[in-house]
Image (cartoon, rainbow, N blue to C red; front, top):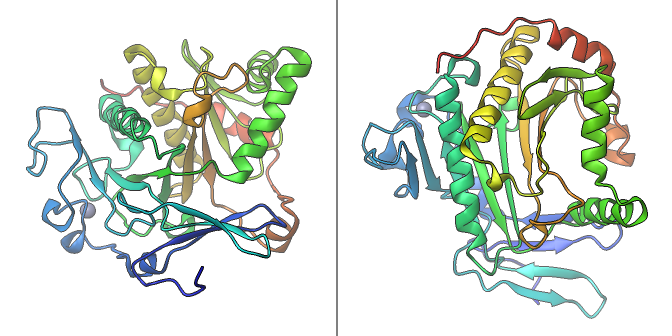
Length: 337
Ligand SMILES: [Zn+2]
């Protein structure tokens, strides 16, 4: 295996000491950083590859009637026709050369600036329907093992476009850190007969100390050991490892809870940068009794420094109970649809 990678090709390497996965992705360096609506691929469909899906479904994909538009990411770290060659060097280092997979961008709205808290629940709901639709599409590709949806909002959170969007990664492997989480959840289930995630969510709902909001379908809370100030977790009250099993009422409930959480955060810290990550089980564990899907909102009020990067010990200057109490006290106006 050569050690120099052609500029158009990416490679995945696994660190055998830390078990960290690293994408060596030279072409990602060329991706645009736009804070200008005149050069924005979210505002100008002609700047992107053709859409793979839009909502509402009857809208013209490259016209102007859509609310949500999903396009392939031109600067994907993976390729549809990737050779996906797994290798091991004579010294025992492992990797995947030219990994097969997909990266997609979900433009959540046609408007360049249109924050979640300003949208209706229906508009937020279209975005989550798009995520479910793309998850199901990725699951139909036998080379794909893991699907991950996330959102970076604000420069500090890694957002390169001002226009709000989700990114969807379909990976040909389950990341090592996720495999570790699965192993401990499966072990807990085997030892106790209980789902660790469900136990955590039910304990939080019952104690109430860190609850931000509780609806028929979702619990919103600040985790007991939140690593970031005002970190929020949204968890379903009906158990499922697979977020795509939500029925329509649950999808609406999820959109309402997400909008509610972002609105509360914005009241406490206006124009806050944050990351959103959606944890749904890897395809092969989509029916696992030991996992429950959930969403995390990770505000970027602090900087990851030596202690966090060196030994993965987080420092959170706001007690989770205090953050939850502040967020809970905010009166959120009901969304208009
Ligand atoms: Zn735009």
